[in-house]
Length: 100
Length: 205
Figure 1 (cartoon, rainbow over the protein chains, first blue to last red):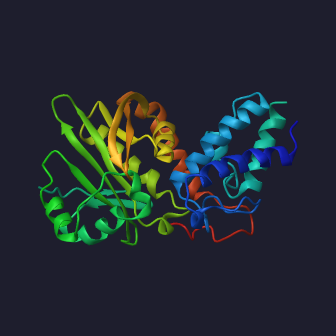
Figure 2: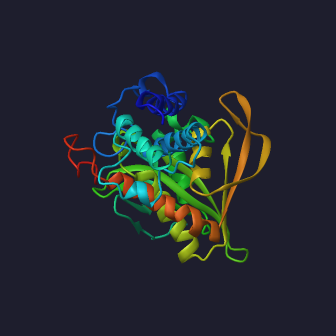
């Protein structure tokens, strides 16, 4: 099983990749509670897709199963996995436990 | 020649681009986010003339939030009624702050795809994206478009030649891939945040 920090590092990696496309004043903070999507979010849906693509790819490689972040399971979660990096990491850890 | 078609979603509407939008859309085209698009008009009068001169096989839309605030633009151009294809173009979110946390871009694209495939009965839509515009390439591929080719040194932007990546989407790929992913992303934007972390409805226009 991966640790929370290992999964957070995957999410931050995707956010770093997104930041490379931004000017300095647009860059998002690599912190657990940075709002990703929904109320008070720091990015729009175009940027969210970039994070989704990169997290799905890196997490699938690291965890050894296909991580899907926009399937029925994800969108029917009681709270959005895309609230912030902390919530997204927790959701990926749940998937990892189920696939262990 | 303009059209009078308005497409309505939960978060945004697409309404016809009008000459009165010239100053705003020109400002967007001159903004940082448009640096990877072809240069637009030189001034508002030229932009207004360009808008008024759009041909009948183009559908040019303003993306506006449900409260009426315009936040971007999006077009379906080169619609060919015989071959049933069209080109998505001029996709630009001009007011980035207004759409943070709102599935505006994805719903705007969904409305345009529905219009193209379900109302116009197109079999295929396509477009080209500057090779440096990695966010847009990633976005379009995630939403179902497939890379069909590359036009080398096709654009001269920001002092340098850039390749154009050709992307295409067939109607069955739209139904199998694009639509479910678009619906998921829109639903993500409506999902409650983790408890105690914000007004659940604050982002809904």
